[in-house]
Image 1 (cartoon, rainbow, N blue to C red):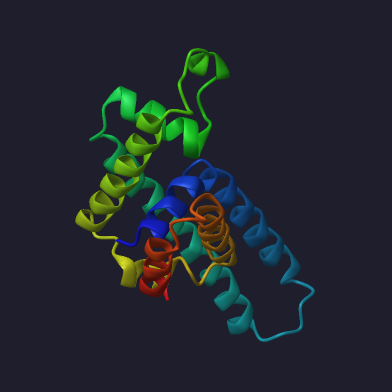
Image 2: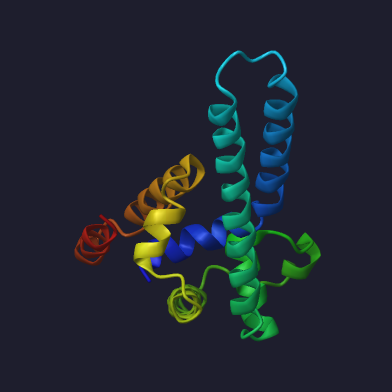
Length: 168
């Protein structure tokens, strides 16, 4: 799996529950508003079904991420949490070294391992493009992940360009 896709999934993981709750609210509003909506019933139903399918896909993604995270050590999960999730309390990171070369190497290794795990669990580039890049949230998140990597790798443009070509 493309490393940028994997990183965008990691960044999205902590927001999936909020996204699914928002989708529930949207579905409820559409259902309640259907009483006053004069558009064809099938068109209204299609919108509700489309939102429900997005919710299902997000829940599937969360399940895949949790399955992948079960294969990591506690130290690796802490590293991932520090960079991507920010779920644990700040006190966990009191004496945390996040500026050494070793830290950055570990983060790169973990994101590559995560990409491989997602591929192994069935989420490859093609499926990611078909399912998740149709959602505005993931389009924007992917754009930000790529921009962030470009900013951090100003002197290493060749690997980033190669990854960009693969994601297109």
